Image (cartoon, rainbow, N blue to C red; front, side):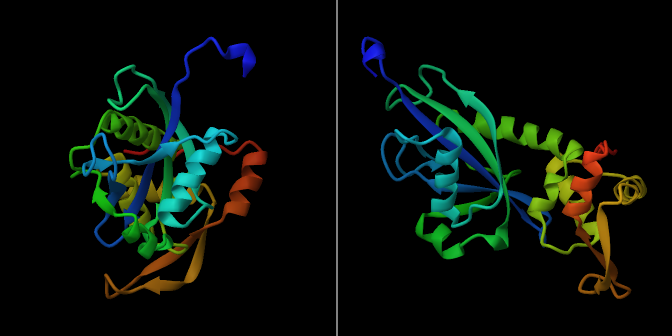
Length: 233
């Protein structure tokens, strides 16, 4: 640190954009908290924190996620770094935004409650502090692009699901309607779904077959040049 002692010091932070999917209401949701300190105390915020001295950015984001939800084995990736000089009125803070995908039922609901966190629909978000709206907008665009080329959408679903539920998830993420026939044809042609000998009968008398995502088969196919492509209309 002696070599850099003449240079000014700045704070480095991470902010986590935590997405969950409400399979009953067919809504993509975001986990938000009421900020517990100044500046902007009591206002809606993303979950975040400062990076510790012996901690990488990824480790800091993982720590913030675990503290809020109690889970760690989820999809978590960087979105963008924000460094506008006036972005935080409290100090000069440079923050890297991450987004995570998790099933709502997988998180520790008591821990979320203790931290004052709430799930809110991405279509009906409250006013967020600082540049957090910009972070959310960028992360959603990232996610919309990613789900077309990688099977990360399955992170938001329970282990077994119907094709209708899978399509509804993609429609919630992409924020548009998808042609049923094209979607089914494309996803089934990939050979990465395993059909189960079980039907979901709560929403229809006839029932719909359950499927599971076969990650092992997907990874094997990927090694042989398979490319996930779910860019459907």
